[in-house]
Length: 235
Image 1 (cartoon, rainbow, N blue to C red):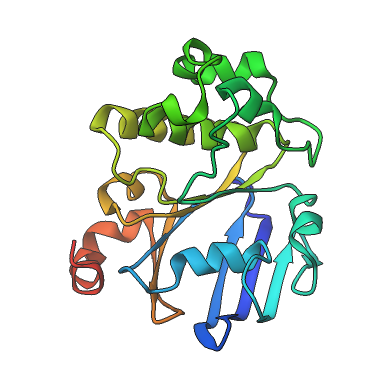
Image 2: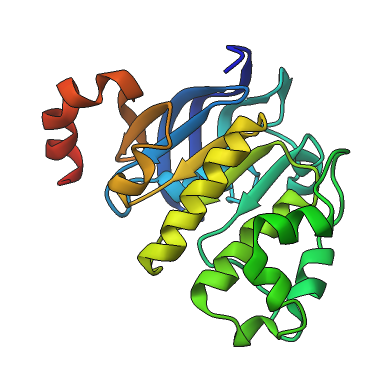
């Protein structure tokens, strides 16, 4: 971890219509770090990722990406700073093949993975490259959703519930991929309900409650703060 701040969220408020979801989120992520946003359903974790990308309705506060203020920017301009968003619903194009899905997103920055590199990372996708998106299993679709943003050149990855509902063998593979991406210098903000998936991967865990940051725990503090975590998360 370089210790250089890559993302800083300060006093972030976000709305869907009249619904006020985020009430002043505050946290930062350093370059090369993996930070996990933990919390119960409805706490505002997914909205935080969407607000960083400019995908909510009204938002206010500050979102600094690599020293650049983006709070008034549209999503496509934010993405071109090297952000890749993997949504919970995956967003696979049903009528396109696996490989066509991979080739669909635009390149937003230099240094994206080639198809060969992606197929080396995800051998399942190479086997299924001609398959239609909807004919792939849930695990394969999740691998495809993650692989797709690696092609774009994004270096800050916003990953939303990527382990949800998947077989243990797929979850284990995704954990291996995240560990590999960290070793290659990617910066990762991970929203997870699955504490046992997120905890070994994250350098820091941030607990979100009612649209605010309520607790931050570094990896080395896990054992001493487990009781507080259990109370907040029910894990």
